[in-house]
Amino acid sequence: MIVNSQQNVDEPSTRFAIGGELPVRRLGFGAMRLPGPEVWGPPTDRDAAVAVLRRAVDLGVELFDTADAYGPGVSEELIAEALAPYPDEVVVTTKGGLTRPSYDQWRPDGRPEHLRDACEASLRRLRVETIDLYQLHSPDPRVPFADSVGALAELKASGKIRHLGLSNVSVAQLREAQAITPIATVQNRYNLADRTSEDVLDVCETERIGFLPWYPLAAGELVRRRGSLSELAVTRGLSASQIALAWLLARSPVMLPIPGTSSVEHLQDNVAAAGLRLGADEVAALSAQAA
Image (cartoon, rainbow, N blue to C red; front, side):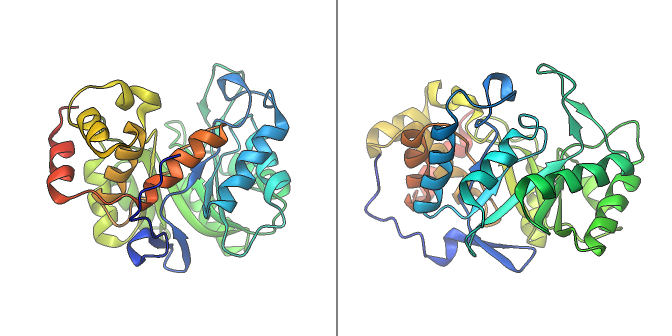
């Protein structure tokens, strides 16, 4: 692990309050990679998966993102096994509304009855009475979006959910949801090579809505690219992954990257990025790099 001497994870710029009341360090952990191959079934080494989660807490990670579709159910169970009862500073977020009929299928299901059942199942697996942040995993084209969001708003009113989030949405869908209930976060695909959700991010920044970029490292694509990223990594003596994460953190104060890994070594490398400080010229060079 390379730790920059400028690292100070308690600086205000490294923190964000989800929903205005759940402060977390902005670099979190995505638990999608903890289940078995193809995000299906149990991990090949359950003890190692549990060790990664516990090491993340040791390193100061406070935001853990998962979903009922990861496994399915396996990722949530691993988080509970590793971390419950949860430390006061830990915020666990999960998602519902995307089903897994088989390992190679991801199907949206935004029916209110499904979302209610999915939330109850996540509560049991995570061993909590209230989920701090529950996100609609994907809009379902077969179900009116307002019906899906309305069901989650009802779960919030009943105390099952503390804050609501959305995933894979447009600005128009965000606005439609906000007309029904407050939205604390948005989780869309976003990284240095894919900025198609720039308009959504801009709205989130203006309105202090947390933005969780999924696929923050493009599964290694950015690491393999040549150009400003690789050049800066060599110049700074850092990994390309660390530079890519540092760029995300510099992009917006509402950005909450959630890189995932099943390796303690990679986890430590990722967490070190929270302490990196890129200069304005470095941020500009990276931003100008062609996608």
